[in-house]
Length: 278
Image (cartoon, rainbow, N blue to C red; front, top):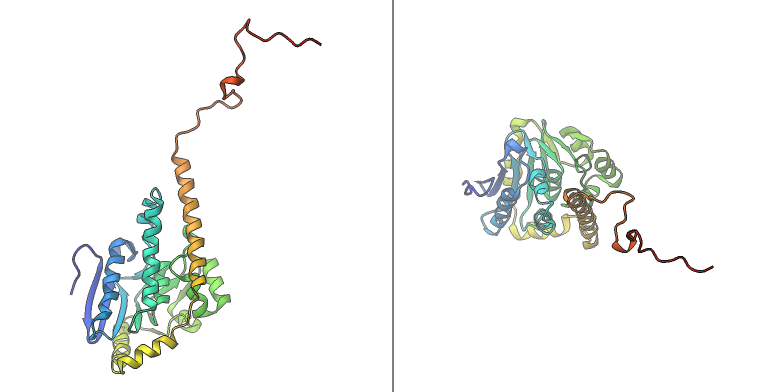
């Protein structure tokens, strides 16, 4: 079924799996408000007992290019609205990690920034051979806020995580599999079939046992770790918003060197105070 036009996410049932396909190929499937709405509905679908697996993928050559920078930049003039928008994405990734059923990222193409964070939020990630994966926050003058600094070290180790975050380098599907970022790299035309087989295998297990397995199989994350990343993002975007507001304010018309207070002006001729007696 396709969601109403207010979203850019297509929801489809394939057996016991509920697939979400981000459908904004013209923007690299970047996450704007409509995508977040669609993904929230997708996660809510796990409440249906018939849904045993959630699968996330993208349309075209991209899995997800991250947050929609045009939308985020447009909100710089309204800092509370911008922070609320960014926090919505953060809460989505956290909800993904707490989903009551296993989650799978079917990485059909480019996954950068927030797209990487969505991948990291899933229990299993499978990449098509054409997929390219990396973090582009620094390249865009940003810092992560949806979990990259928290989840990436748990996936590939602290040293490789720092390298990926600081350099912005791109990994192929093969390298991502070798580094442990994805569980498998498969031919593009085999991606859907491979994920279908995974979903069928999970759906065949006892649902109660699967839920308990998830509680021990998902790496724990301390609340302080989430808070530290969010505080860094909040400080960064607040500084950006402040700088933008300062740049947009009317220019200071004061002439350098000229007095600025009335009591510093020279008195009119003839009204000077007499000199003090020696």
